[in-house]
Length: 387
Ligand code: V47
Ligand code: SF4
Image (tube, rainbow, N blue to C red; front, side, top):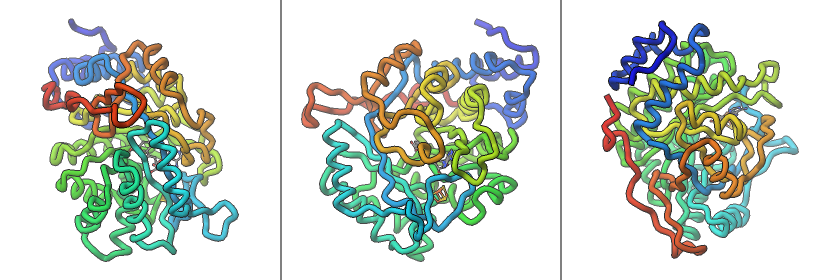
């Protein structure tokens, strides 16, 4: 069936239908205001359904932000704190283990661990967090430390990144989250987070992780001072690394939340920008299997709509999220599994619980011994969607 789209979009429609890769200029056209959002969404949905059918994935997870003290001052960040601020905290081993207990008691399969770069903590402190959690709760997949944190550990340890990753793997690391990517282009990065890991470092760290068999996610923070060409440049850099390694599991476009940040005069991106960015990401990232609509950040309604604009994943129950709530997110702090499943069904999709590695979770009872993971869910190579 030939889809009817805006005349300017026809060459891109033809490429999408034949599985041909989109170029930088194609990406720019997808952001052109003359092109109706609905048409971009229809094309993204073709790719989404080709790769993931009618499924929308979710997981049962929790977040842990062990400290908010951070040496950096990214001007989009409302979470960080100075050491001398009344807001500062660094969790004890007991507090961290209590979070692990709570996660397991609530049926979580994943703990997402990221935080600030505390200048008085050594690498051993971060390593110990992974070790004690893994030793106590080996069933919990630990998705821990962004490329920015890993770059800080390299600086602290003066050792190669692969040695640091090996220590973390030995302690029980499962995979890496996608944060810290922000916008790679130096015209933007130098203005929003000048001192932390640059694009080259972030990409080198994820490449090293993939080469060691560690899967990771990737993100893009949008809606600040960047222009569409910075976003397309960012997506193409991620696509190039994925061509090389195949190690990214999912891409998460992160909408900027301005409250309590150094960019609080910039309005939050509209739902239209959110949906277009979701769809453009699905179309440009032809080699990444999943596109996540992180409901905490988008709001529940937009995350539901995103299921028709390229997304096939809604993240999880997300207990104890701080980064977005400090920056003004008004979404709840946690969603019950029934609520997540209902909102996926309302969006016309089939809810599938997954673990961090996108294997289906099968729960034959209430206790972890009655849970198992199914086979790996279809990937790009098995559905033959990559060009
Ligand atoms: O790196 C910080 C972003 C990231 C703000 O891998 C902000 O599955 C918007 O990466 N407004 C952390 N964004 C969150 C993250 C993430 C979230 C969910 C799932 C996964 C995953 C990863 O949040 C930071 C930064 O890019 N961020 N402050 C803000 N005010
Ligand atoms: Fe620190 Fe991360 Fe916030 Fe930047 S985004 S200030 S690195 S906590």
